[in-house]
Image 1 (spheres, rainbow, N blue to C red):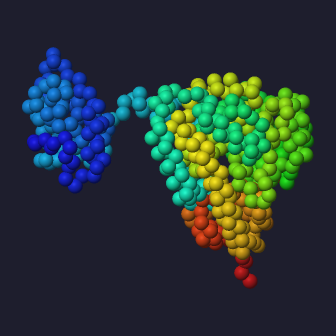
Image 2 (image 1 turned 120 degrees about the horizontal axis):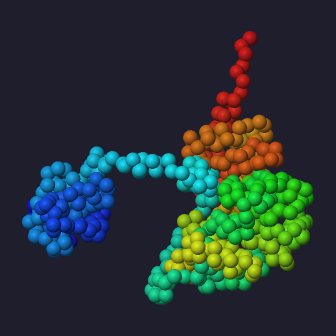
Image 3 (image 1 turned 30 degrees about the vertical axis):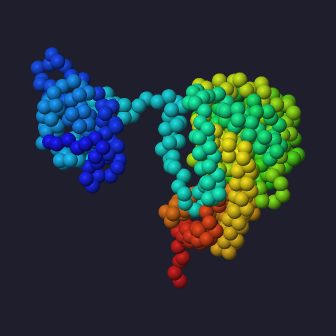
Amino acid sequence: MQDAPEECAAVGRSRPRRLGEQWSSLFEIELDADSARPIFQQIYLAFREAIVTRRLAAGCRLPSTRQLATRIGVSRTSVLSAYEQLLAEGYVTGQAGSGTFVAEDAAPSMQLAPTAQAAARANPALSRIGQRYARFASGLELPPNLPFAAGCCSIDAQSIEALRRTGMEVMQNFDPAALHYGDPSGQSALRDEVAKYLRVARAVRCEPEQVLILSGAQQAIDLTIRVLLDPGDAVWIEDPGYLPTREALSTLGARLVPVPVDRDGLDVEAGRRAAPGARAVYITPSHQYPTGAVMSIQRRLELLDWANAAGAWIVEDDYDSEFRYVGRPLASLQGLDRGETVIYVGTLSKMLFPGARLGFAVVPPSLVDVFRGARFLTDRHPSTLQQAVVSGFMRRGFLTSHVQRMRQRYRLARNAVVEAIERQMGDLVEVEVPEVGIQLTMHFRGAVDDVAVAAEAARRGLVVKAVSPHYIAAPPRSGLVLGFSGFDEHRLRTAVAELARATRAVIARAAPPQLSA
């Protein structure tokens, strides 16, 4: 068998096959000089096991016989004999001048049978928390980029170019210190930019030292639960409210106290009656999820008074308040707080794009050290290079201009969706034009199964969320949550027409059969 030069790729092979040799070069072969087995057979058996167990993947290029012989200190003849046996049995393929590769169909038909111990692990004994995670994961899917999927964002060519330029500048002026472990709170440059932004745009009262850079709002909420709550602690939650936070709270042992939401937001008096001594409250005051209600100033002050009197914590999730379409964005609840009771949670992912996976928490000074410790034990610190790019993007004013452009784009998208709903589905639903955010909620006028409509919409290539599952104790309303950011107006109008057909199909199936005369 002839060996190809190291730089030569197989004829007709894609580039990943050529690069596959880097992984096979890491594969170590242990030889036993005292074994009765000849060296070539030991080499053959080592490669065979690696192939059938998929340590070496299909298409992976094996080292040349000369390279391997030199590396493991044996004669090239032994390696050639091992390769020839692998080739004869179909484990590898080879061609003169091309190299030797793991056969595409070698591993699937030659899987080693699992041991009894491995079979027993197929149904592992999980902790109580692990069981909750498993149930949640069973219905977990990656959010598709389909019409009405919540959380999808637009990013235009101007912002992409700004990110590219900022990234190039970061790498051109690369500081080797960025390769070392970072501060659990995040890089000071990014924390400083976030603090400046929040003070101006959201009236948050904070210093950079109070800001923690996290992988998203969900991590901020998870850390808050772990730091502040013990199993059995009572926590007010909005009813209806955000399902992932509800699941996170209950999984870690909190006692959920559903508090009804009306047009003015969370009913503080109802919460007082239900659990006056609750340990904390989770709230979305600027754009309540899923109703879209904005918490009134009177309710905000009532909530702060209760929290200060009860010694409770307020977790304020300000997830998409940057995109306000009428007037100026409302000030944060945290900005009204004088008792240091609010943990303010936000995200850069919805301002930029979900893949950025950057969020933040602003915590009272008394909690900074404990949150830093919790972050260290969770995942140590965020990516230093990514932080450098985003802080540069913010420092140069690119984030501000991006949000302004997206606010205009999302306003047009919102208007297109509302107009299409009123035209296509006005007899079926009620929809209020949201003044803030990147999604809207519409409620059915009659008794319509919103879960069935969501399922039918999914079969038609749409992603809508049913409202009724978000309720706990309050009488559920039937409706749908529709995201409108990240999609052009034509696509949204077409999607509304399809949603109308899906809804009418569900209604028709649920209607009782007509009796013939």
